[in-house]
Amino acid sequence: MKLTEITAQRLRSAVDLYLQLAYPHGLPSRVKLPAALDSSEDVEEILSGFLNETRTSGPSPVRRFALRLGNEQYPFMKLVLQEYLLADEFVFVVDTHDDMDIKPNYPDYERWQALRESNAKLRERIEATWREADLDTCLRLRARAEELAARRMCRMRGLKAVVVDDQIDLAETFAAILRADGYEVFTAHDGRKGFELISTVKPDLVLTDFEMLQMDGLELIRRMREVPELRSIPVILATGSNLTLEQMRQATGFLSKPFAADVLVSMADELLRKRAAGTNGSATAGS
Image (tube, rainbow, N blue to C red; front, side, top):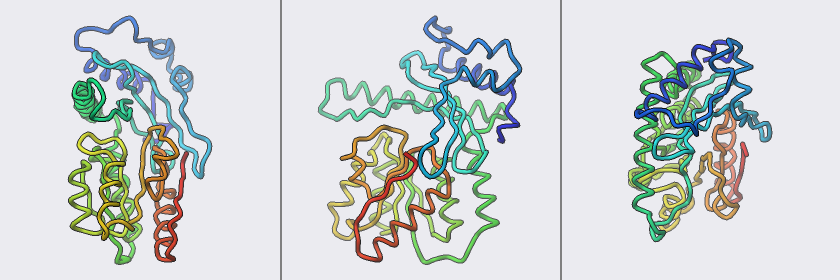
């Protein structure tokens, strides 16, 4: 969906459908909506009432607009309209915004995990409802990336990649981009299955999300580093979270979500060149 294709009615529809599912028992007074959402047909005026989270630094600027609407159990979930991977391709996404690094030995860990699972299921329901209403989500982004990949499909480079992300459409979008660059790509949708797949495939490159319920990206990296035959595989950690420098250094490369497709491809090439040269330097982009 191009920015020019976004209308006031599409924005209102996205917000209304989100709120119906997030607050089935009625909207609480704490939820504040932009005044222009109901009173204006000017998309720029409406978006001025969103949080402008556009990232202008890094190799490729990415536009992102967010409303922190929450849900009945958790006040920090966001509705997001963002440009992702493909220039001027915007999609609606739900950012659960619950990616705090809570360890198993912390008090209320089980309750926190249950909340995150509930948020993830709500995200899936909202995005499915958006698709039914003809509002573009990552599924459309995936289809667009696969179309472009089919046109650009080049000769296989003899390289294998594993993509691990619990958002299936996003994982398959990343996979399509890497396939267009000549990789044979395998996908997994949680960290545990990702580790099993990596152990079997022994890829040349791994791209993993950080925030996953079964095993997060840092734990996946830690387990890989414990296995001699997996230890040297370059791992790109992709996340929208604010990680510490020490956490970022556990990966070979770091990408801050959302990012552009060419940034992913460039970083993958850079890390493979370094591995071939026998160096272990890390790389960061999109932050």
